Length: 199
Image: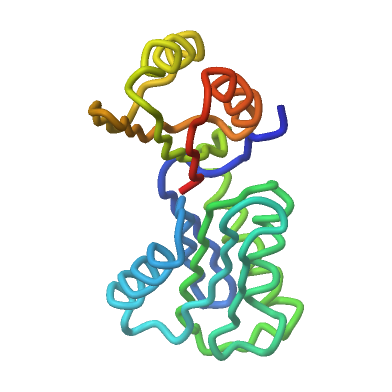
């Protein structure tokens, strides 16, 4: 069932020093663009005196929503090597921000790429990579008479409704792993007409 993905369990930090320059990497799990923005703002505030806050992220299933940013470093020397580490560890729902304090000596493009890559790698390796499952949230509506059949299927599948309302018309919100969704929908359709919306 190919509905699993690799991500970081918790935020982690990496460090790389070269010729007086300090590269502090923050790697963290994220699940939305709002989380990316708020984490970027938080890190920029903490390291407000740093010259560069370069980052890369990937959210969602392959190919996912992705972006990388050099934040004033020469093009391709920061964001791309950071993103390269996200790719090489096959991670998603992850943001890595590398903060640079300039040490007065230029590192050249090769030196910069190496620095951003190594700091990012250090942050990932100090963190804990975990397997998670892509989930679907289903909103299902059905008649009261269908309730027993539907509830039996939900019990069989070991699902736990997030919310439920029982009236003449019943409504329920369920979370189910993506790879099992199709099979579950076929089962509940055998209980009669059911309205299903994937949220």
